[in-house]
Image 1 (cartoon, one colour):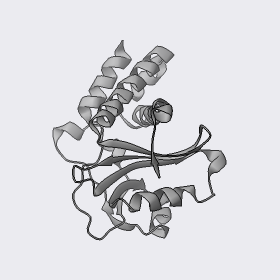
Image 2: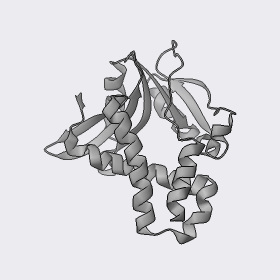
Image 3: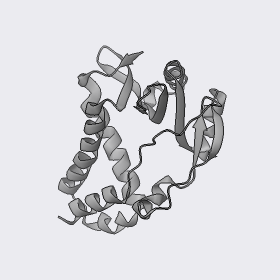
Length: 190
């Protein structure tokens, strides 16, 4: 297991920011901006999201576990740690298509499990993968009913909370809230 070097971090942050941007654009009230979207706006929004990642990374709360060989990135885990470091929120496992179905996802989960309790959110169609890898279904995920999640709530609909331990504690889960959605909308208006 090797934590990421700066060699891959910008590419990984870019890939993650693009994915989150796509989710936001098709799942929130920001759909109305799709018709006026241009590359400059896309670049500004992905940079906004990347800056969030960079801040968490700099603080040591965001970690990236990479699997590479000779400067070729096969896949990675994008995860957040709690202050105790025995709790991990696994935001995403990504394996490039040409390296899938070779056990890398299982290896990533196994390596992360050696470092503590893992909690994650996943869509219903991914639950079986995690169950086969010793995770337990905990419950359907519900966002807070407070005013900070009225617009962004739809991003997290239909997700399940999974954990590799029966001793799952409350762990901070990385979520974009309505402040982020409003900031992104402001960028799209420019």
